[in-house]
Amino acid sequence: EAGVAQSPRYKIIEKRQSVAFWCNPISGHATLYWYQQILGQGPKLLIQFQNNGVVDDSQLPKDRFSAERLKGVDSTLKIQPAKLEDSAVYLCASSAVAGGLGEQYFGPGTRLTVT
Amino acid sequence: EDKVVQSPLSLVVHEGDTVTLNCSYEVTNFRSLLWYKQEKKAPTFLFMLTSSGIEKKSGRLSSILDKKELFSILNITATQTGDSAVYLCAVAVYSGAGSYQLTFGKGTKLSVIP
Image (cartoon, rainbow over all chains, first blue to last red; front, side, top):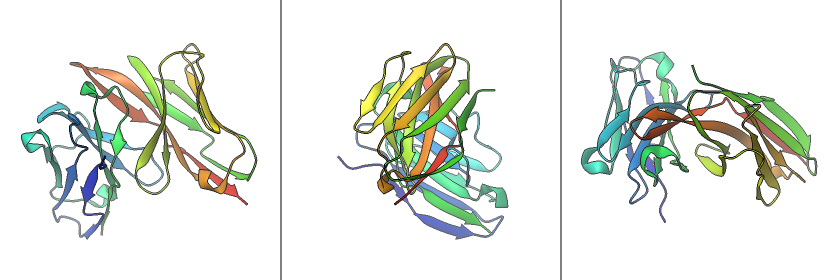
């Protein structure tokens, strides 16, 4: 089975610019997550979708970050405007188990550098 | 605030050594504890533990959970250079409305030298 796909793999932008990341989960997985992983830290959950509805976005900085999951499949995460502290790897994950109790499968991530 | 603490943060061993990685947690609404291996970018799943005292085993890796003392250990025997990676511990907590979220520790960076 194909894994979680993400693009782009790398992105360099200047502060105050905007950027968007794309994620395609494993086919049939209803739950989708976006994580931010800063160097030397574990992944931190930004937002969790169940189908195309948001389940948890309590840690998403909503003044600059937004995410959507149209038709309950692909998802995009946007940052506008970017700050230096947004430099991180953005990981997308999906889970077959509704609600996210089971194993999560991670994509390769997008490494964002904000200069 | 939910907290997951891993130790040590980094470890260097020689091939053939046995290592023990530690993970302690303080969370509300605990449901399970998961271990992941992160080599380049994407963490890959190793184990999910929900019950105390039951060892999960996969080849040279094994893990156990102690829900009374709130910790888990991951053992790797006869280490190989391919075991070099960051090992992440995550705890699944119930966040309401039928959903669960993972809180990760910072990870233990294991380096295995020939």
